[in-house]
Image (cartoon, rainbow, N blue to C red):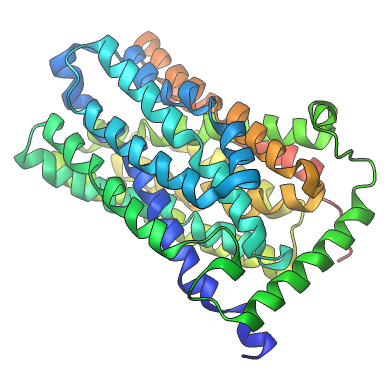
Length: 418
């Protein structure tokens, strides 16, 4: 196998799809509540504020295993860590369909967040060992394509299932796949390329050579970083990335968790039609995510890599609320989706500016503390809907969060010679 062929080798064919489907199932069980809440709310008598809490309390649990899972993946086994967490989150997702009270719903969502919370940092640690820096944005982007894909698939499927089954049955059905996929994960995935039964030696050699070159270059760029764990909490780059991810999660989940409800209100359609309409902004988001990730790898991470798409999304989210036409509002929702998915570029940035010795801990802190924005975003939008009767004020705050996130990331990204 040639070096050129190694660059597009088997890790793109095996590792990325298996990991992507794994995380797609996580997002399915995380976000399907946004489609089901209108029907669940009738049975459990939930206000919009409580709906926001039910959506966001997931992220309070999400914080707990961020750092432990990253360190387990680094020091023990990412493969085994994720296998255990997949099984447990599947059981928690099934429990969500069996709840009988508001308190039990909030508890089930919190527990679901605990077990899903370790998935992202553990996978990011594994990706560091599988893909060199010049492939990071694509690897992260292609892995995280599962986020819009999960919504594209989940929205119509959940909508159709709700036409024939109760919301309880739908949640139970959608909690079973991760338990099954955990077995596929354990068979197909290894902690390092040289441990995978389907990898070839020359591709492993290529990866190791490129990773060594990346580390040498990073040592020159990050001489101010210390490998001591305690200094991570004083590292301005880590703190800025935590702040940026917090704002991003607030804006992202504040928008996506309430989008099905907004589409229901403006379309006055059945659950199945709402499901298909909701899939369209995510489909456009998938296209945008691929474009942003490929461009970031081809031309290198730039200060505009996240700032431009997030600014477009923020402006569209703000302007779209002032159109009385349901069609125009929906078009702007699609524009928001097109610039919203900057995950590939974002997660290519930490390995570029943070030393390897503290990278696992840093990723855990970024994901753990940053994802708390996923609690505040949905809650703020829901609370403001209760207060004002419209999502306008909440979406304005989410738009501001997206824009400031883009500015923060631009301040961390190393300057490049054009």
